[in-house]
Image (tube, rainbow, N blue to C red; front, side, top):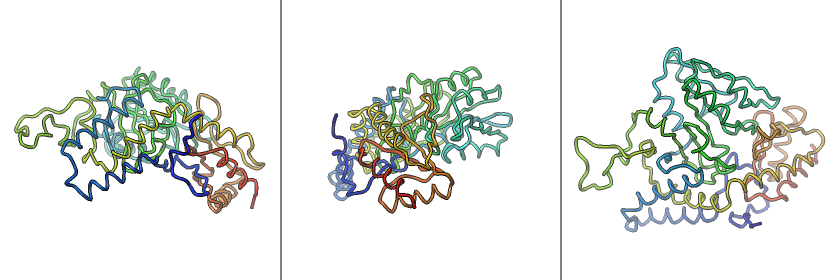
Length: 380
């Protein structure tokens, strides 16, 4: 097995198990970021072709990682951008319904709730698991004749539960509804075949398990959704021929094909894309399946040795289990106290609601898991 830990900076005694909050930049990405800053320091070294080369390179790497066509990939600065594109672009109005699970992250919640001013009804599906998770079957069963969009986190930030898209996609297709998956907590840490998933949109912020810089993200669009969405916010790079400043299209013009028309403005921000390209290369080398297996092995280590007084707070059955693990003490106060002890001991996890969210990545080791267990076992 490769020593992936060596591809990241030393944490100098800290145990970092919080990739669901921020994934660490690989060393190669850090070097690329320094190179990008040096280019801005000496802009005489910035070649004109860098803008097109970088965007094409990152789009191609993302397409390989998610088993989709390059034309499906939009380069954005977070998951919220593509979600808003769909919320604005479908022309939803009075009588239409958007279906979401309870407990969605704000970027996949507020854009839909904002549609209430147009008369759109947002239906929040109640959990059917003690952790607060909503199963794919429960979500699919709630699809009805007025459902126009089903939006859900592929993996929940709150409890780590996973929703298999297949039953949801099947139910949505029966009524012509669009499916939107927030992949911010799954992208990079588990295999995702977008082309085969049937999803209409898979949106992901890249600073978590994709190991990219903050302000990077991906939107993967199905051909059917691209045909339905109007371009209301025009990025001039989306215009055919716009890279030739000396012969710009005037009057009538055409847009480039595919999801590129939905790229974020300043798409070729080399401060972001140069490091992001290196992060994607590392994930392609390691493979998301190997990331998932590594993370689950560390979470299993914690599960099997969990101290008395702590219980799992994530779904553990195979259809809903992910690469993250949430655990809780007997009371919310005890869980918060445990989190404070962990931080004091330089063991980094997130406190989400009344649970501790443990989210390792390739850099994490069994020793990190053991550090966490030791601190939790020490009590108050």
